[in-house]
Length: 547
Image (cartoon, rainbow, N blue to C red; front, top):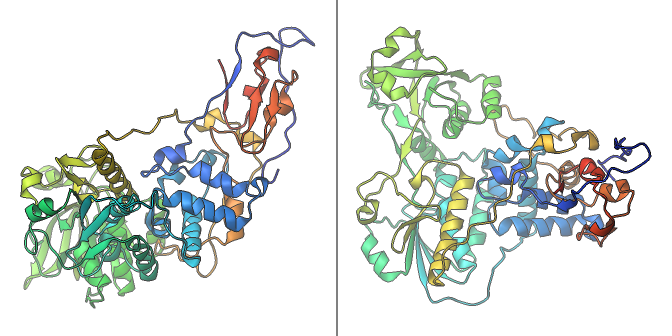
């Protein structure tokens, strides 16, 4: 049974010695949602994907066939598995029930391996139809939200045009994430695969100056805006207008475009989120000593720990009170430590409360603001209602025929932006069909205490190690090989779903369970069941309930 162990039958206490307890309850199969899938912003069915890999031989599949099948399943919702396998903060792992036993399943590394597999074999994205629709859709912005929406519409046969204000497609994927974390050949390959579905791309075309939103709305049947949030929100502290104080997205964009930036010896980064992590990595590569100051740490704990181990100082919770300048350049950043329960940093800076906290100063040759961002909605006045953000519903609907998603509706992750683009595309498609979008079926989430953790053999998580596996800068440069992907997939406990372990069949003394062909699981003969509960008590995944 691989990583699953042979289980001894537990002692089931009965009302009478030597007799089975009679109960009015009967077993039923009750599928539940695993926490990995429930925590995935894009709703990827992670458990199902891992089971296909783990039990490939039982289903008559080779490892390569299983990988290809899983890749196509992922691509139905996410056309960028090699990208998200590198940049997603993988909340699925934080929620994994196996963490309570011996470490979460490393789905982030598995997804990266599958993404690389798809690129190496030039796998093509799945279409839902070969028909060509007459409706024309305009997508503004070629970041993860815009590309995701364009992909989902193109695979349904719609004619899609992307309008991008910059010289290359990718949005923050290209201009906001360092190449050390997302290689440009990987980015280009996955973007080109989407564009290969027949999507037209117009570069260097800004809404409001090169073309008006009104003209686009007149020429197209629907519009999706995935314009991102590129503008740094000011700290509102003295000195932040100095020449060597820049926003993190501006800094990363210039660096990713190949500009040589002189940051000097000491960089202070204000903020401790994912963008701040990227800015710190680039600054270190430029030879600077880096200190991060933040009211709150929002980046993944592992990434913060990796940077700290590499010598980056993280001062949190703390806020910047003022930036001392000389000759128009920042020289010293003056800060105040906060309590862990302190409120909004900007409110504290503007009040007298900071005076009661311990002050400290940081020498700075360069200051990067990586705290907050907001979208630039210039040219979208007719649909923004004067707000600084697009206000969209769960399906991206903003106004009649106008949809939005990604960071321009609220800052989030790449994976969340992909999901928002997908949901908007589904809503657009349903609108043309005269139908409302369909909400997915919601199942109860199964947690670790509902699973028999002791049933599973100990199998510590496989970690990427070696020369290419170090992550001193928070960057994972290596990936699991195919054999390791299979081994790691077998650690999945199939929470809340049958995995054909046949435990119920083995434990039932009345032969209530009829084994069916692989994948069809079992059938219960309720007419011979006496409600002894052995099957429900022994089921390792929590799939069987008594009712």
